[in-house]
Length: 321
Length: 225
Image 1 (cartoon, rainbow over the protein chains, first blue to last red):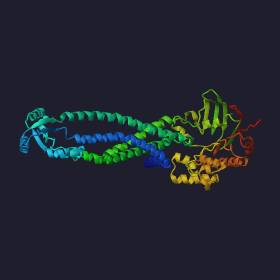
Image 2: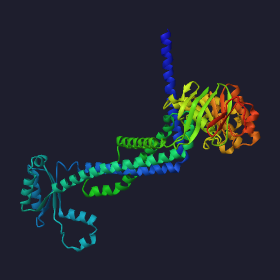
Image 3: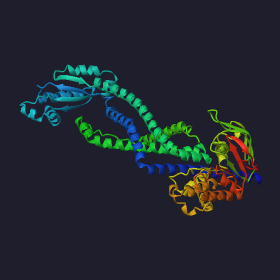
Image 4: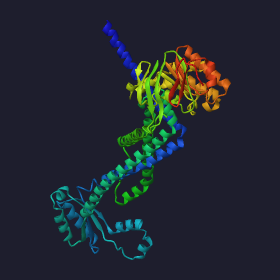
């Protein structure tokens, strides 16, 4: 009986300790929020700076992500563009497309005849007036041709290109692979740049938060001294500062998210127009909810880390005198 | 309650603040520490509160050897002490209630308990009606009383007061001293540093006199100045 009583007694003790601990955390959190509420301009400015710092790497990430979506279709099936001989008659073009369509190395083709090409050029080049002055359409018909996947995979792309180049009806055949390869290499460099940039900007966020918390610590020196004198533990004193850093970090990443959404809204229309030019229904993608969560978590963690560093560095400086 | 044995205190630059202090204050006593500015009154209190560390000798407070009170034990040790200052040291961005509640919040009391104790403490210093006021709205004497309410709200065994009447006129000073006396009557050991000798003599309590860091008179001795 006696033993049982002592066990339940210690359980109650633990519950009391956990209760106190939770209450202390709640108090620290409310206190930090109160401090931000009392100084909204300063806090918002800090969050805005963090927001800008975080939005840059996040924005680059989005850019890459979108570029990845655009180029995803390019890797396997690269296009060949055939500029046809302008002298060809419609029948000749017709028979050429039929030949090509039946070719085993070719997946599909798309014909843009001279009139369509001219229309498109007129619409987007801004040379409308000049073009009407011409009595003859200067543009050739074009065939966009996707080689079969196996052709590329088995390395017979060059052969196909050679074969097409040698056809009488074709003036020039251009393979887009060279260009695509350059683009992929460029994207790879860009990825590295983003990693470097993200690291630097993460440091910037740490410094911004660290400095904000450092100032807060010095502004509340008296309070810290009094707290210490009445027996506050270091954890008790540090908690509000850590919460404050955390909240600023979260607020900053929410700002970064808002900045990104705004930027995407601004870019949406021209991008759709551009995609239309390439006969694509591509759309800009915003951050998915999981990525938003990661962004906010990164902001929060950087805030916490920055304030922790500031607290470690500056608490020693405050004595009790 | 407090025992100093051959206690020395040097500052980093070699200046001696206290030289070979031996004294004993028994539990439940009310003792004045006096002497000119710089005689070491404040240092004596600061050593007891562990704001500063003595260089040599032994200090025992409430059965604890202060040399062994380090790190995480310091906060727990301090929770048994109340402290008041000449310049009040109230937090001006919080109202009277929150200022007085501070030691209880630190010790993790529940909200209901905090309310009860803060009200009781404010009642004892006669400021219950001012709990919603901010420190700067109060007079000097009132601020000092808020400081005292804060120092006793957690019912410490030992109350240290550093020049509590330094900025107050004689009538107010007497009032404050009588307040300390009342706390002493309910069992709190009280140690008050003050240079106001005229006032202290009126209180008819034991006096410790310091001069240039040395003990000039001990408890029970008469003052030879």
